[in-house]
Length: 267
Ligand SMILES: [Zn+2]
Image (cartoon, rainbow, N blue to C red; front, side, top):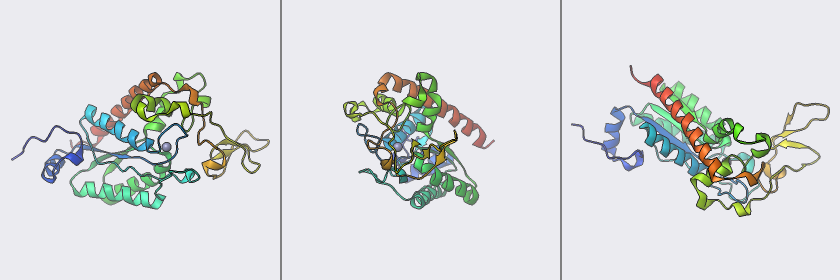
């Protein structure tokens, strides 16, 4: 006998018997993964986590998916020089992600999309997803809202290269649209990169090499090249721009979910 499931898109709100019944319907499960790391003096350290979960909730409601309880810690190896960097190692994040996937598979789910919102997570999460493909045969999807925002928002700014940055656009605006009460824009200070030990940084992993247009890669801690933790133009943040971010990022992610659904449904 099947009973109607409660009107929720959150997997954690179901009982085990309801999870069993849900799994038989072969739904898409969204797994949010965030990070706890600095984003400049004006943004909260749990930003990546709350945005991952906000995006997953909205996507689940709009596309009929379920959101698994979030993993709110990630890997932030590049921000160790700032307070509040509550980072897992890459190996731990890979293992936790892999074991959550394994447990979801054991609960009867096979369609899983990770909503991962931190650059430092991508390597370990990719490893977990590929190992899950090998070991369980499941096809893991991956959505990275912050990175999608960079790709989808370029035409909104006069000079995206100057506007974009860690703690600046478009994340500052997106936060003003989603969590205005957690943004302290008055504390924002102009970001930028400083010379480190004779190097001329062009990004936090790249330096100018004299006589060449091609950049060279070096592994500084971000704190060695940025006092504030910010790059990009922090003065451009606005909730209005953030609404554009939401519309475009959610729009792309919904199209992705529909494509994933089409290609993973049992025919
Ligand atoms: Zn981040």
